[in-house]
Amino acid sequence: MSPDLAIDARGLSKHFGDLKAVSALDLKVPRGQIYGFLGPNGSGKSTTIRMLCGLLTPTEGSATVLGTEVPGDSRHLKPKIGYMTQKFSLFGDMTVFENLQFIGEIYSVPKADRPARINDLLDRYNLVAQRDQLAGTMSGGQKQRLALACAVFHRPALLLLDEPTSAVDPQSRRDFWSNLFRLAGEGTTILVSSHYMDEAERCHRLAILDHGVKVADGTPQDLQDQTGMHIIEVVADDPYAAQAAIHDMPQVASVTQLGVRLRVLVPQHVDAPVSLIENVLGTAGIAAQVHTTHATLEDVFVAVTLPAQERSA
Image (cartoon, rainbow, N blue to C red):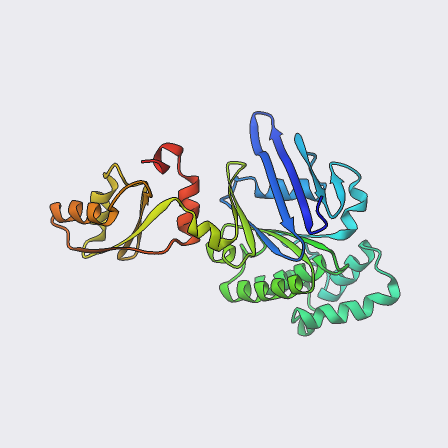
């Protein structure tokens, strides 16, 4: 394993009976970067994270995580990892201070070092005013910041985050990502799963999972440049009628309405896609403006998760 990699997974698979939750996953996560897992519920993100931290034994394959083989002796790995789930594993009947104090004991942080570390985390994650508040009475954003403080109490080299922003408001999500960038800047490697496209764009690199299979891997910009699709935007007076007309075109892989605009994906082997769409709309008597545009990560996600026959329409 290269010393520049925090995670090197090879053919990692997990089966639950006939269900293949993860299939032959290869994954290379550089140290000190934020690496994203993008995919819908049931795509295998959580299962992969649990295998990487030793909570689940792979059916096939293996991984090297921070120099430790998985499956293997995960006792050497767990002290180096912080793990935060979307349900914020906090003790609601304990105060913020008591939650942090308990985490310090769990990770065997020297007793003399705990007060200073707790004060640092309270300040860093804007929890000073909530120090003596019961965790169960806090807002979603406050709980999120406390859960992150608990996850990094022992200064882990690798932070695993399983959809950590699914239950908070947009401002809390922005603040949370600011904290992640600061951690990455200090050398922490972060693996974060999400189904939010705007969050995926913040990652240094990301993988897209679909039914347990990695269907794309690279930087957000690389993935947007390599969709294999013409991205066409249509602005129509009657977008619903325009969508109905475009949907039946054999050259179209996907069409989605976004307000008054339509987002149309056409395989790159199709010539003159703008003219094709303009002709269909004109024949149907639908007034519209049609032009090519740049791919978004949502376009990438749609393109790589389409059935094979639709990707090559």
